[in-house]
Length: 297
Image (cartoon, rainbow, N blue to C red; front, side):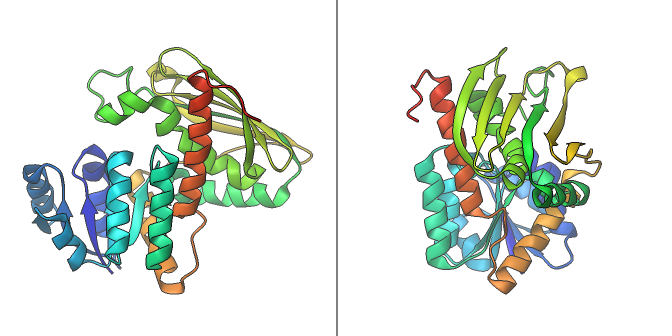
């Protein structure tokens, strides 16, 4: 499968480009970016072609991987799907329900495959744990903490404008939801959303399976306090999400495998654009509560 990369920022440089170059079943055809000079440098480093016209790249490939801010990603994903390209998207798919739904509609209309790269879902140990806990069921409550130091660490490469604007809710919130939803069921409502220090937020979720979960999300945690943790408690006892030890490049290669399988079989992946839309809907509801909106339940 011929695949192109849209984006030239830190994430594209550190993870996407190496993963596409190393994947044995993907032909890394080219790179497009909003900064042509950066696209040229990245393409040269990985032995591929830089494109100045995004539509020319879309015409030359079967799929695209997107490593761009969510508002930019959503519009280009629609454009790529309409051009017949399968989509390897980053999370969140978008930060508005309208944009996320437009991506889903375009994917369905074009009958292309889509996979959203929720990192934890493509780490073998974590993925197996999620499947096992979903089958166990009967969970009473869950606690998730996703703490980063993006804004606590001077010069952090991922302290990008969109993260400064949207904060932890939108950057690490999707990771937590990608673990909790398949285990506890969809979210019936965001029961509470409370701001904490700086960009930190705390959420309480009511799940269709009858369980509740609490989330603490931050990109401004002290570096010594950083890490991700998920704990489940229920009739089966207490269990914790295993530590993921592999890097993003290996996980992205597995996401590439998932895209290839979805394109070949026509069977949607669990982390497809529709799942990405649902995550966006939940985060929009939380954002509404954080901004002082009344709970409409």
